[in-house]
Length: 368
Length: 269
Image 1 (cartoon, each protein chain N blue to C red):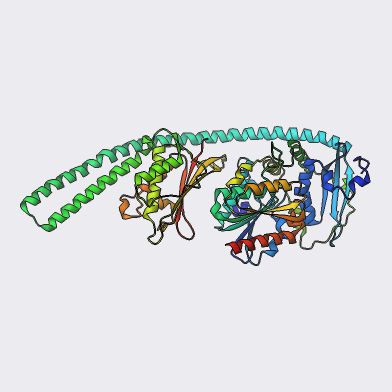
Image 2 (image 1 turned 90 degrees about the vertical axis):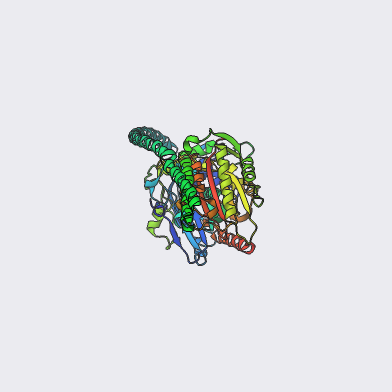
């Protein structure tokens, strides 16, 4: 073998390892595949490897190897067969086989893609129709919310007002007056709720054009809008600051989440909030099944030392009428946040942190 | 879809603290068999095969998903989530070092620490970086793999060697160990050896241990030092073990290194 590889005995024995004689590609496969097999099962049969001669000539061999004993210093016995001529012949067959396989695979792929495309088109048709129907409903629903339902409530308030004037003049009694006040309060609340619902419902049509914003500036804007001195988040972990989207609305989301942390603060510890950001890769396809394309997302995390949410169900936390604290009124805040993030093709989720506190994570597609 | 079946997930051990073992390219979970007995008493061990390796469900292979190491990282995360794992110590060999890092960037809260056995973020030489291989070597690798899948008749090479007795390995295991689907392995080789994840290293926030072998010509000392320098919270142990698979060739030293690191971590915590 030494003759074939153009080496002198002294150049190899005790100086080179077996893998040093292999070509780069053979070395990788030998060390990642065959050597583990040799170590685990004590032998490997029929390894096809390429050795490198001293002058860089390839010397293909077929080898068997076995560990010859199990003592402290096991040795490996190896037997090989030079494959030059055979290899040439085999290479020819292999190339032909590869070409045939490739053609077959491409043909097969083409047929599969065609069938898939047809299925997708059918699905698209169904979904477009569905979308059209939903859109129509949307418009009607919006009209009901913005007008048809507002009007009776406005009239209830009007008549209640008239009654109020009358009771004041004629003195109908305290109980009557108290009930009337309650009625007025309830109709006021319903009107307010209706208006918020309508705003929530028509959000997609009121979105601003996407622009690029600076996350740190957005956070500062949210903080100054809140005007609560305790809200001073740690921003040292903002690794990525470019955000693309409806910047005023995303700023609103940040404001809402900061307000949330404040509402749930624990009395015994000073409020601590950390906002961090970074780039991660995630599958772009969330709705289409079995489709994968890993693209960049900016991940924004808002971590605090608050009490966390009283419920754990994500759907409920971001639910339309979920209400966590009396002050927040109609409970549309987090649902609104989720809808804004969804309209950016992003996600928002929350998680309680072990040892106290909660964490919101927002993922938005990152366009550099 | 059953993640645990897809990835042939095996859970055993008497402890609660989780150690998850992720195999490298060219092999499967059996490669950890000399390591796991040392941890069985005190830990909960999670082993698995990537789709297309070992006894995984090859039918679940998706070229687009596994055309990126991110797809493999998603497997790791899905297994953690399916088993509700927390504070995972992930031991990843070779390409699984990178896969583990990617998973930890995605969901750092799932991991307590990463133990990287012979990691390399990029195998190909680049300007100012020595990965150890040229594109030509990787083309050769594809050729070698192709050649090895031609069913050679066994009489071509004389079998004169004595096989040592390894009663713990059944015939069946012998057959299945490192068995790989040709097509999938080719793709896995491409995604492993052509990936360049150098830019991801600074994003890793989880504490890491790097186990660097002597004379590892798949992931050299220089590459190990490069990884160590780029990771914010890393420790590097230079092992006496030679080669690229210390967990198989030098299991005692590998076990000692892992135990030593976990003890140090415990004392700090």
